[in-house]
Length: 540
Length: 68
Image (cartoon, rainbow over all chains, first blue to last red; front, side, top):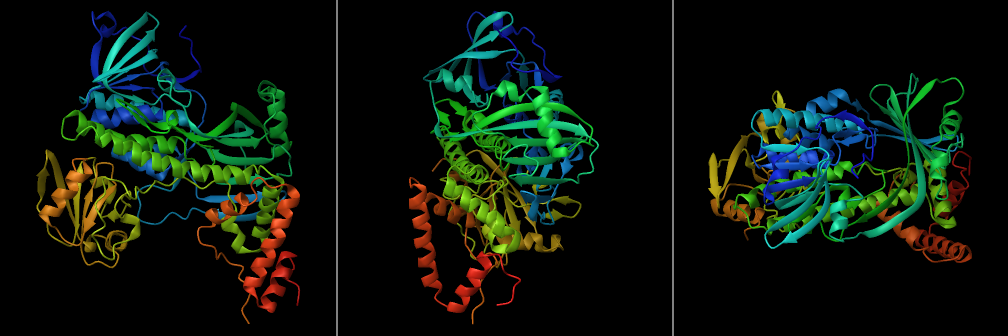
């Protein structure tokens, strides 16, 4: 009935009978999050820190085994930092910058992520998914000790979902049998096979790719440097493509493209996995396989991420191929976008139509991720003779001529979406302002004395002023905006001026709780700011 | 005489590559080959300059280090 689908790496929240299970009528919760993975736990943490009571239902009692999503992108680290657990992720993870691309037996080129100076976080770290989830759960526990109203119920599996006019009814199965819950809002973070999505009979639009990949994570003392290596048609023949990428604890991700018509069970047998690894590593390297998996993938999304009072986030809403690290990272960005909006709707400050902007903004982001992921997949696994011909020509040319290198696509790595055209944005009012911090963009980080700019954007609305005046506080429609007064002189490196002023002498930015720019001007104008704020909370 | 450009020169290269591959959607291998031939001739005409075209032919033969 309630059997585990996977083994646990960390048992965090053993099943305990809740008083709700004995209530005469369904107990109602403001927010129920279904799924306790990285996306659900980020949502719980964000909402809990804002004082919103949250109930997380997880059908397991903790964090699953298996390294799974290993590349944590800068934007996810910045979000984790805002929630109070970014630093430990970097400390635990492996920072990497260099990528090398091979075609057959030759290195065709290498790239360096060349992180721009003046950001707290690197472009990427590699970290096994259980550690990422553990950091979130530990942080949740600490937040709860300080009063954050978050409850996690292990072994609570959602089996039925029904929407009413003003809420959602959930049928939940536990080891003690079923019970019923009511919720004002449900966030479905229950993964690609989302039981909530299925219960509401909702589907997907997009492509299924006919190829399988074998992941083998191996522990070994190997002399390979900390870099990403990718092979097209590798000479060691372990697959049509292959990946080698370092994780903490001397663990390495090996990933082989093994074709569509494979027998999954047979491929996962120890001797067959070992054969592929041995072909790649040669006879002299001792290793231990710590995790293995055969996966196939889709690039697709739900038509819309909001269905009444049920909001879909992460894999339940959209799926991509792993090339580009756009899966878990985009899910974390989904709930970064959602949490502040839901909090404002719950306390009556914003109309519930603000949640439509969650769907609209994150659907555009999903499309961007799907496009990049699809293109990388088409390049890695060409689907026609001509496509393969061009692919191999690009690879061959890239070894000789720089022009072909930007065409090589072994994954376009995750960067946050800029919400151009969002209904929450004001028109860009800053002539000469940098494109990278235009309305809709996530705020680029800047070094400030012994800290960074993003440290100061703490989950509230902010009015950032650079070399110009504004009131310290203002309020509109129940939303308080805190001023952050800076001067270009505060940053001798010049990054603040380059990233926020451009050709302008001064600037005023209205910044959303998720650190995205709502709009900007050359000077403070009370009426313009009030209008922009109303727009940013969906009141106009 | 303009030199053949061998540094990146295509705006939004991923968009271009996707359009190039998509142009072959639904074609047989023979039809694809014919499309490629037409495309090369169209681009060559656009370049026009004979010296540049000679350099391109040599580059495609991966003969960049050989004297003309």
